[in-house]
Image (cartoon, rainbow, N blue to C red; front, side, top):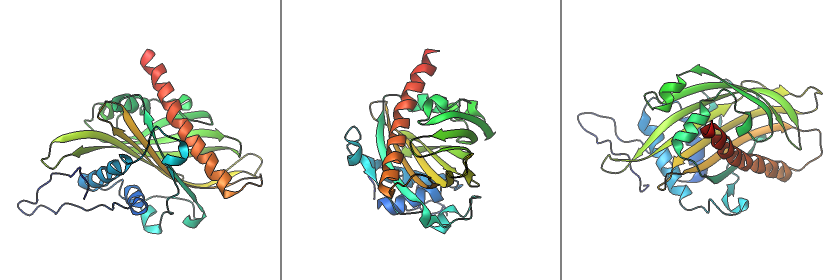
Length: 268
């Protein structure tokens, strides 16, 4: 059991407390699969377990020391979303943790901005629209879910492709064994509904699924973590290891770009 427990007592016929995996592969799949679960305790226990795992990482250390290659998603993990008709084992999974110098409310403010270009590494443009949920009530936590659609173009050393990404954000509160508030987290889930091909037809984003995590740290800053399962078609002759390295570099770069974008946003 994690050190951060969800204090929801089994009283008067209430459902028993859910259990979440502690092993990273199973936990990563659980947190993607259960993101839309209507019982908030399901994500609470999973978030608490992941926070406990992040406490063991050198989040300010070398990229290799805070990076992982989780196993691929299973069909049941993506059963509730519309996605490309492709086998999931074609994805190259990567995960990486990091630190942010900003607080979680500042990150929520950034999430509610229509223009995300400055916060996204390798994006030539990144426009966000809100398809369900009110950005204002998400900011003050009077609503806990914000669904977005993101029209963007990604360009890096391997490819250049325009796409639309669906991304849902959810506030998840972590409490202690007495039911007292410990920290806030935000967890997002994103995916493609179709394949996206570059203009020249030889580069493509074939499928992508990601979980992003923002955990309020004890010093008021934020711990970051992202798990990405993606499959691309690349014209260059590159190895899987090179693709993974590029993905890790891009995710890590996005952590830093988000901090810089928040600096600019708060200065306005």
